[in-house]
Image (cartoon, rainbow, N blue to C red; front, side, top):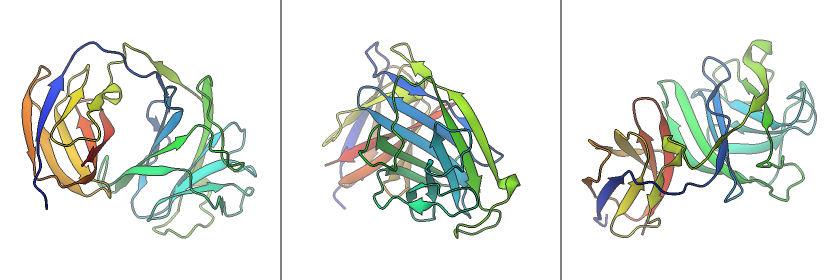
Length: 258
């Protein structure tokens, strides 16, 4: 392993953030949560989806009155990846798109709690795929529907009414230049060769570092908002996922180490 030393600077200046819309975290059921962010600058949608870690779980999204209607866009976790699919009608097994236009950037087991898996994935607003819903930043709301297996299994099957539900007309909130959430934090330079910095406008207590596959690497404790230096040793070249954490929220960032 090539040993690399980083100096991590936590700064709190006033600077411009990209304009982002978010649904915020939606508690769809006792153990299924979803959050959708739309970045106007990059035309990128970021989905954070959490469900039970011993079975498949799914989320449909778009504009509908019935989340199981034929043609509705959805994704589901199959214990390997987030599968890009579409509904083929109520009571029928969804069909795979053939081309997966979602990129998984984080896959964390036992997060946010034991027995949970949290997937973070990104996708362009418009993929050119007729099976994919086209996100638009001007949209005021979005419809969602969720489902999970009724038992510990990754084989898609009838799940029963108690393991599905809909969350229609979920409003987006625009995060502007005064956004104080961790999600608006910026990691730079990225890619990095010798150091990186985090710009944040809110409290930051620790940074959890994970490999691209979701394996825990280490935790960096942050003691103050003002400029500080924290050594992070032993990171080899590759892609890392940074979980920024404070007492009330967490946010995910990707770091490339060259």
